[in-house]
Image 1 (tube, rainbow, N blue to C red):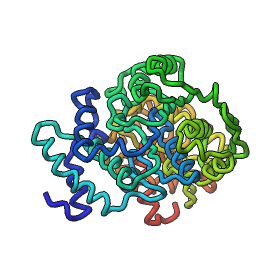
Image 2 (cartoon, helix red, strand yellow):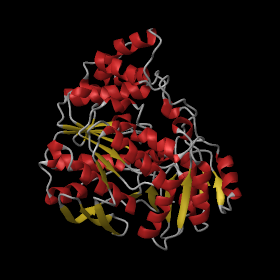
Image 3 (cartoon, rainbow, N blue to C red):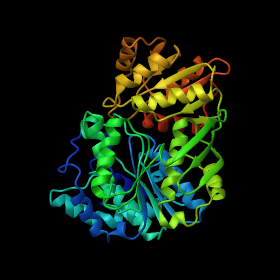
Image 4 (cartoon, rainbow, N blue to C red):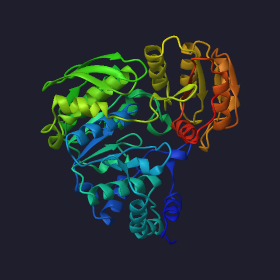
Length: 448
């Protein structure tokens, strides 16, 4: 297969198994093999050993925390890579150096360089997955660009995730909650054990507040690895206040410094937790810690952008995009709406993958949505749940005011028509839905 164009390179990538779009996946050493990942990286010159890194795992908040860490490193003058998933609009969003997504030609060249090695592994009966290939390409790009530091978000779980070949300067664990139960296990303890699998011997760990059963797992893993453990809410503290619909004001205290008068253009108390986590992690990454000052932290937080996470889009009517896709994240969304937009009439657009915690999300929406109208739809993701099924399950939970739409465009149009003057359209339930709405808004929809 010739890979002389960007489009042909993407087609080749998508011939690999993509577990992000598969509904039920075994998560074990047969399916997700670090040996396979290490073999692929070895064929590409072992790029993972050519840059320093911070490794971020968790159920919720890991992307935001990674984005804040990336901003801190950039403000401190480091050439910094950022690897996140999934993307919202363009796959190149997943790999960034500085403020720039990976160029299309650079990605094409990387895919072409990896092709013979991937083909050889396929012929041997051990084909790498899409995420393994893309992670290897990200690491190669960071090595080729000679980044000073790469901030790397885990894709799924932690212990067997393709990113877990790294030996980072610091490991970060954000909030752990119930998600991906088929892959990671049906209890919080099992899920926490998979997330805590990124903890390495002697490598410092910064951890967000957890439920007691998850915290016990993390503390045991850190103790067994001899990894120093720093807890947000114990050694690291914060205060915060909402600043309307534009962001939050906060202050952070660590064992090393005080960071006052901070403003972060992200919404919700959970983002204050993410900021405190990122600052504490930055203090434990040597190349970053030596340059960190309160003034640079203040400037970095002002510059943070993380689309699709309580992102307010100033169209008519105002539209808020949030990738909440389990019960805990829906609870944070509803709390954030009450804190930042009290009294505003709401209209929801909701879609979800069929294997997500639909019951938990719909329960939150029914119980705390205040009877706001909900338009249920489906995304182009093959794992998407049927809108009629979502509406029926919402009604079973006591939800009112539901209707269905066959696709994202018609659902958004219906919600915009329903929004009264001063109303706010909330798009939630799926990052795929958020990505599709961002593409629709980019083409300039007429006012609802």
